[in-house]
Image 1 (spheres, rainbow, N blue to C red):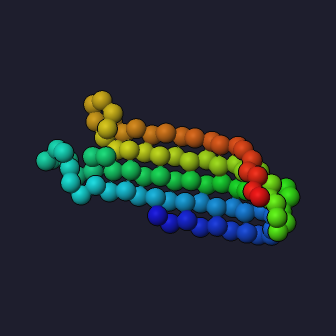
Image 2: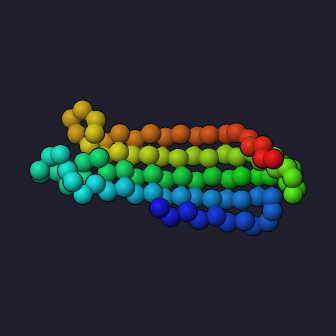
Length: 90
């Protein structure tokens, strides 16, 4: 897993993450990458209110998750997700 964050100026944060999962033991003898997973995420977070006792954040995140050769016929399964939400931290 590798995660990078960039803060050009508070209250704005850009971030990205890359995760790679590789399976060493395979259920099929001829297949080397069955069930391997790749995960990419990018997002931006903006603090509407930020102090020592309270934080209100707005966040927009996109991620893509691929699992290799698990669909019928040996195809990859890819999931795309966009999330827009808020966080309240006390």
